[in-house]
Length: 304
Length: 290
Image (cartoon, rainbow over all chains, first blue to last red):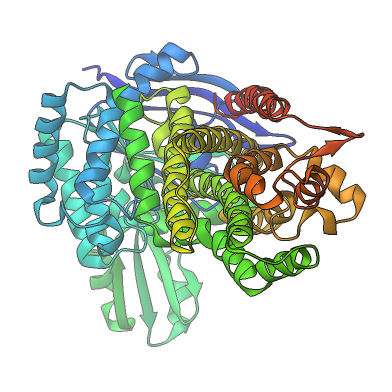
């Protein structure tokens, strides 16, 4: 089955004088999918997003968004009409009410007045805006602000929603709310979600992940692919008497006063533990996590 | 059109609901009033007293002098205040949000200028009404219809000139910090450059020449002439030489190379500046945001 592509990036480069911020990256985002874009600060994430959102001109490369090619004035206009962005920081006007803020920006998309009001009612209901609609944006709590930000980003019912670290600095409960809202949106409207985040557990539910480092893609795939490739499940053992270890015939790696070994799955640990039970003081089975993928990839890069 | 109206109304709301912005755009006005109340009025009256007894109509004339200077400053500081919104938007990424929408770039740009013109004109008109109340309350006569219309016209011209010059300056400002520095510099310098804080005659001649070629000071000259024409007639009663000396000393007329600059020349100078600076600003603006 071939999926329709929402975003296609081919050999994208961005040069600032001598410095190359993005060094020829290529990736594709399927329509209706949740795509996570990871990377440490300075990896080129923000630059790439700014290019995709038509804020920055690429130095070279081809980008197609919703079948419109980026860079031409006609293409950019069509792209702008079909994308919504939740910026990292609050960008609505603190002096205006939430309703004033959202409706003002809604007028930028050439919608008929009736349609705009219909959309407004939809986002209000969707993000529980009603109780804060007439409050000034500047007086809202962090979580309420984020709700308003997302409402603003989807007022024109875009096909793609960009979220640039949408949950950074939020309390756990608000993070959960934001996260649920995004998930619901994706499932119910088939909107494509393009996400950058620092929280690995958020990227874990993505369909596809791209990890960027120093302007280059260093890994990509589904969360499971990445875990398999970079961070397999591990068994951690501590022995009563370390003298027996050499006679056991397992490839163990010493780390502090424990020993680690990679295993194919968590279940693979059972026979090993059964066998070694009499020599052990304790054991731990660790499932591969994206956190470890991320750390592993960054470590590897340092070595090379 | 709908989009521009929405944007302009947004800028206006952001401005009027931000008390700090409103306060700072009025700050230089408060400085002028304080300076005037503390010593400017007294020094002027003392100087005149050496030649003739100070009467009510002389006080009136001096009050009008102050009011004219004040209004020309207000046109500058209020329009600059509105461009503060533009700089803030740039820094807080609000501009980025606008630019990622299907709104046309030109409309976004024009909206700030229209907003500056509207707010600038409204604030100067408000200040004009307050000044007129002050003049009448201190025993002066109500301005004639002719003078009132003339003054409103000059104020409109002053607001357009200030918006254009401020737009040009703000194009080089990227952060709110830089903007508040610019605001402080202009707020302070404008009073000197229009000969409002210190009368022209008290300044060294090279500073006087600088002021002569400073376009905004010509709005001050025009305003002083419009406000004071009647009272100068009343006070000096045909003593031409004495009247002209006073007018030169206090910047009611300018004399460059021995010729007195006519009102028409001042108007032409202002209009010319608006056109030249306006075109340059538009070129820079459109190169910045493609």
